Amino acid sequence: MPRFAVWLVGPLLWLLVASMSFANAVPPAATIDQEATLVMQAASPEPPPPPPPVLVSDIASNGVLLVISKPNQRMYVFRDGKFWGSSRVSTGRRGKATPSGVFAILQKNRFHRSNIYSNAPMPWMQRLTWSGIAIHAGHVPRYPASHGCIRLPTAFARSLYRLTEFSTTAVIVTSRPIAGKRAALRLASVSDAKVPMRAQFRAERAIRLAQTTATPIQTRAAPMPAPPTNPTGETIQLAAMSSRGEAAAHWAHLLRLRPELAQMQQAIVPAIVNLRRYYRLRATSPDAVAICSNLKRDGIDCFAVS
Image (cartoon, rainbow, N blue to C red; front, side, top):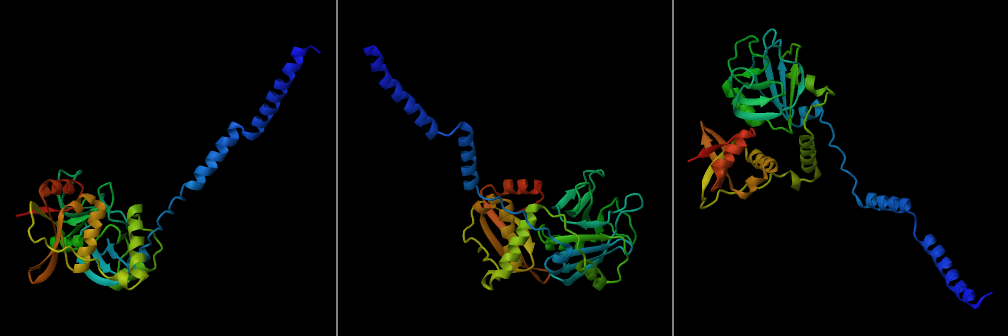
């Protein structure tokens, strides 16, 4: 064998061995992709489970329940399983019947006007469907007379508006006669129907229930913000509640809906109106009036305070 050939054999053998070792050390592309996928799956947290459904029977014992009987033209209201009040109503007339079923509160607006019926006023509006069915103040004869909405006397509609919340309210509209408040509560207590509540409101309700049943310390009302000593800027009022606990809970609810309110000076101010005590939710900032206008467009009640 020529001498130059001997010189080539060594390097060629070395290259052959090195290439075989490299091929064994590096996995194919498919294997790399599979391993990367497994690593990403291991690092990614499990998605949170969907919030549990809310049953009518749950609301009947822990929440605000509205039961409307179309034959009786009557509404019965319960809070945490106890009778809160009753009122006559006027539901949809012939050809515009109010639908029966179970509903949640989808939207609230103190000064709403109908988008369907010639801009008609619908004060203290609480929307049940996006197709135009709502609870609101209006003319209440002793027979069905509306275009499908559930009309209430103004004073009752106003009080009910202040009572209900998105995550704690269920509305039952039935075509059955109801013989009084006990029959109304019994109808809801044995129901296994689900309240068509938004996922965020179902989750909020689940958190509230967990907090109120965990320990005695957690059942105490959240502290209320004190009125600022020297408020600067414009002041708006968002709501007035009938107890300290409701006022604190409503503040927390509003802050979850609109985080920008946290940048304002917050206050809950006690007041006596017609011999009844209320707790007014107020906020102050240089641009409070502009913020109030945005809130109104989203259905959150507020007005400027001089």
